Image 1 (cartoon, rainbow, N blue to C red):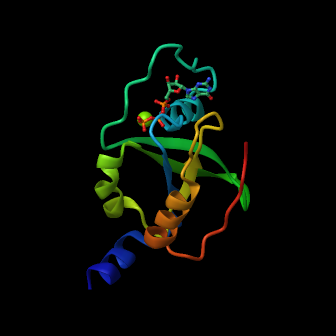
Image 2 (image 1 turned 120 degrees about the vertical axis):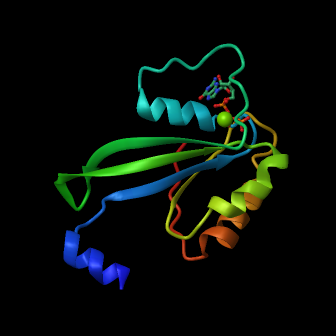
Length: 134
Ligand SMILES: Nc1nc2c(ncn2[C@@H]2O[C@H](COP(=O)(O)OP(=O)(O)OP(=O)(O)O)[C@@H](O)[C@H]2O)c(=O)[nH]1
Ligand SMILES: [Mg+2]
């Protein structure tokens, strides 16, 4: 009833908003990517960036909606801590209606891609599309 009451009161409209989750190994560059997205001039620090504890949510990355560029799409970015002890948290936030960005550091010995794709399949639904970028 609440749904129908709200529909009558406010009408129906599209919410062009999505959740973008950045995941990957510790120190892969997830937080740096988030900061670069919001500020392309952000300088990657030479000294160590602090590890992310839990998840840092930064809202409001706006860009033209691909299907109708006159409209604006908003992505809210969820930047997860990559340390193993933080993995139990992931299950509460990873879902099948999000976009995932898996960041890997080419210079690292092991990016554990299988583990991360396994986690996305398990928690994010197994009908995902995969795009690569280096
Ligand atoms: N050279 C180089 N260094 C980078 C790049 N991206 C990140 N770094 C450095 O790598 C370190 C780790 O980067 P973060 O962005 O904090 O990594 P993270 O994946 O968020 O790490 P956690 O939060 O611990 O999981 C920092 O010292 C960054 O300055 C890059 O593209 N090139
Ligand atoms: Mg981080």
